[in-house]
Length: 295
Image (cartoon, rainbow, N blue to C red; front, side, top):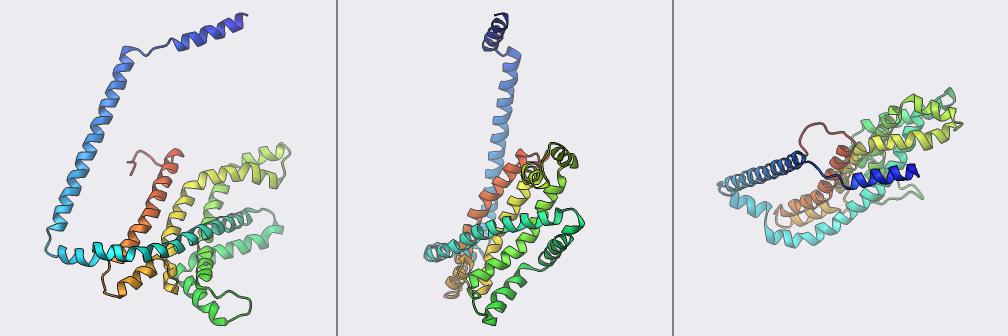
């Protein structure tokens, strides 16, 4: 009876609590400072944009630059073809991203296995990472995209998109596996020891204790790699596949007006900027950013 009465009294006291006048003054001061900072940021941004706009548009060569790179009519004309090509880039990003995550995580686990019996697996993973992290992506694209179909091997795909995707997966999985390995090795050994003391096997410890912590810690750099993947998917254009960049090249070749390239660039920015902001948001939530600005 006394315990229930004490709890009711504490709840009633909490409900009746009101901030003091000094606390209200502090809150009002913080709101005023926040409004002042927002106003200063908006005004300074507008001033800088206006000054830069005037400097650019009043320069001597601006009409020619505008006609060559920012022609509205050419942009409208080329937009459907470039947008259609961008669909290939998006499909590549999704399929390659999933394959890279699976392959990269598998390689990182192989590299962190302990015991002499796992030495061949560790050696394979190490050689794989050293090899494909050292080769330029554009070289892999040329070797696989042009070299393998030229062999005319039976039952081997010859599609340019397929070998372009394989080259991207091989290169990026090497980088992503190192990101995963860094996350796995950052988990303190006491976590494994405690898990084994509780009766978990090595596999259960890896699955239920180590990997959840490791993946959480490396999420921001993984998202950063995905942003890079979004951009590098455009390299498949060198194989002749009609993606956004290749479509822009075809549109440009008719009159040497480079506006389609600008259209393709804007479409890629529409993909990468939201992903970059999301990466920053996740990094801030996990304390990766210090006292610097938010942009």
